[in-house]
Length: 572
Image (cartoon, rainbow, N blue to C red; front, side):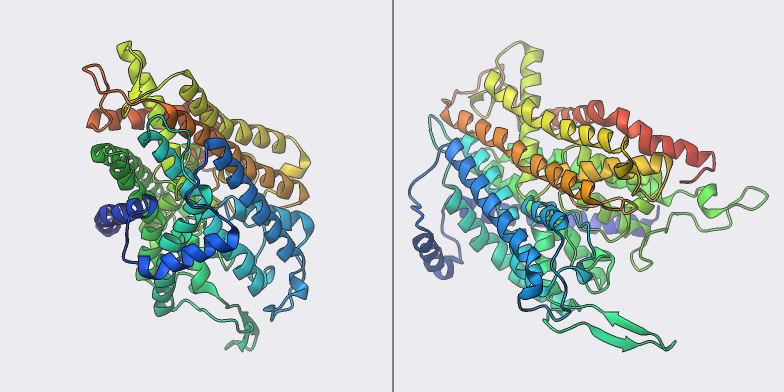
């Protein structure tokens, strides 16, 4: 661990803090229908969109109608992406003449991008045509990000409103999120990336002759546009197989900082929007504080683990002293080093992004445990766009409920009494994730179709399988890259991703609808304040305890066991 590494963390944190309020204010203006500086340009486009799609913007929905619209939209776009993948060989903008994608892989990929996961069981530059990248995958990056945001906004409305049967209009929220937030930001972002050296073209791949006389094919294409929404929408799917470790996706230190910042930009801003829209700014900051503390702890643990010298990795002189530099550089870009790689890994798994600038599979056991644990906590440490906030608000409901039990009175949350139905929906949300992950992981460690494609034996191979299903259900998309693929994994991972996304959204919207119907009650002397440091501590405790109680037995068979064996100089 070096001063330079902590300086990088400090710079990132300062810039993040500086963006929270202005981004949050803008988000709140958009979601509450208030005037913004983009209105003269976007209002006519918005009205035209409603007219073409036969949307009545003044007609609101109850939570069931909202959920049905969300699920229907996602299903239609999933089928749209699947079809484009299958027939891409007959479509234009395919200069490499790539064949259509196999049925199981096409379904897995369509499910992956629909759920904001962007898990990639393929090599992008040799599998997907430019048209597929742009019309199917990049567009889904916008749609899936917008769906996550609007569900979070619906929950905020449910908290804010009183005696209301509706939580908004899905089509209006989706349109405004896309037009006012994602598109303008990505246009600016893509231009910045082009300025830094990221390609943006439709040219065929370039064949060059190396100094050794060999021929090398250099892939290129519309990279900058996909890279922008990949990061800003916490999607994570790379245009290249090496993802953000590839110099065409992430060429400079500035682009690396920009990518890390953009992952947290909207999720962090949403905490301020939460406070502004619920008229309790202190609560928004308390939620932000809980997220930031967990983020800091995760980075410190991962940075420490990757900075440690291990005899089994580096080798040792006969005297026992290390002859190699301290720190694990396996799987890391030399231009980024240990500090930037661990910071990126922590950020991308705190959010449901999954983009990587280093291979998590090559991290030390405890270093790799941090990205795994981040997803196991529910990716609520800022989390994905929208999904991180509504996931954390589920834990807020549980924290308030626990506080109410401790003082022996009905728990209250921002003027709403938290009753049995609310707790049931929160617990349903909390239980779906581990049920899907642990069930699928248990099956695949017992069948040859599961263990036969792991590149490592023992606890590391187990972690590869566990990480894949955790990442899928958590809609993260990063991987322990030693895991191969087959038909079984393609179908199981598709089910894993779809369940982890949409089955968990239903109780969130049900909770929003139930809270919106409630009357607001004034605070009493027994009301637990949700804008204090004590609440932040309680919220952190609930998040950590729920994650630890759920996943520690599985983790002990993977990274923890591997760490103990590493200290005994045994590698996997």
